[in-house]
Length: 304
Image (cartoon, rainbow, N blue to C red; front, side):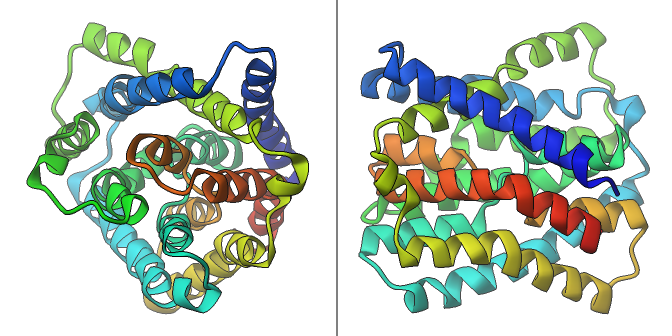
């Protein structure tokens, strides 16, 4: 495992965030533009990326392998939601902040950052493992995420009919049945979906540009959540996997690397859309993303 390869990939990701930061300061992006762009990403480009990632059935492994990856994903979210239920009250803060802490502990950036990191560390073959691990993330993120961040929002079955949820169900069905999607449709989905990562990262940078530097650094509660997200949870998850499951090296490594990701940038998008604590989310997103430039390479060398 090469520290500098992973470190270089994280610098590339930071460049996209810096571009959004610059665009905001130059007046190209503002609050209204961010909200419109976030809806575009969540409802159009992200669903295309989700389905496009599994659009070539011939590249998918056996169904038994897919089911084993989903079992790892189950353990993944049992660990995360144990943290969600126990730690936010210990960290403290306002009700809106506790909603952000829950989101941060529940949803690492397994897609937007997890995909490129998995490929950088483990090679192109690892992308599929990361994609399947992301399917439950999409189902949970776009249903529980708004509830965590919106506070007063009540659950509605309509939340299951969002484009991202529908795309996640389709992608799981395609993976399990090895359905061969026509190549041209896959290329069309990829064309639109490929803009998701840079747009989402630029939105993070644009949101961060609203904060003075002192506010970006946050306070003790923010730092506590950052440390749990980037270090404590990956170490805990690694121990659980080694204790309970005998996994192939690549599946184990990809799973642990996904747990080590910074908070999902969809949190920034959802705070803008559903009225969450945008400042706390921006702070945690900034710190986890910047700190992960160092923590992910370190964990890659020590745990994977």
